[in-house]
Length: 208
Image (cartoon, rainbow, N blue to C red; front, side):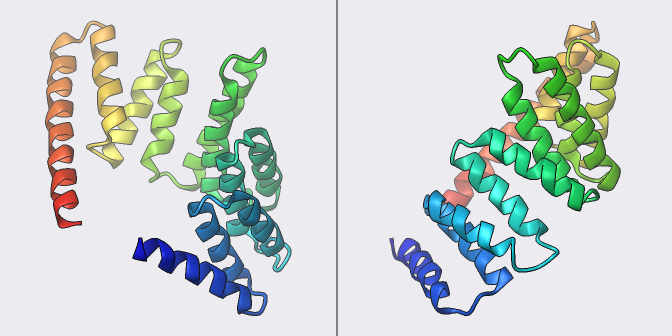
């Protein structure tokens, strides 16, 4: 409770500081965590007007819009931002995630998935070391393009050897394509890594 109040007091205290891009972005992030999404959106829109390099404000705004359930608006915000910051890998990554979220159950599902693939490939282009971009690509390639799915999962695990979703997906892919020994071995590794993560979480909870 004291921690929560402290954050709230810091957020309110920022209101008394003269207009500053960095401070407004920080305030928007705090308000987002507090669930004050309308205020967070207003603050981040204001921050975006203060300087030319407003990429962090735009990304933060897209996150807040997502939390507010305004996914199409968040996606449009990033689509516009990418024209200004075409080499920002995380903008491409997050837009890809939003396009995937929007794709479910729509008439233009395949078009949205194709756009998402393009965004994740751009994310990889500008930051080849971001493991989860490869995993997201694998989920989009799943079933229809197993060779591309496998390649993306292997690249993800090369960068993050214990990426849980990639481990499990690759194990299932091996089993699905008749490579039982490799699939079962990877499932065993996945379960061991999962147990290790659970132990670490339990230790952290005791420390907290």
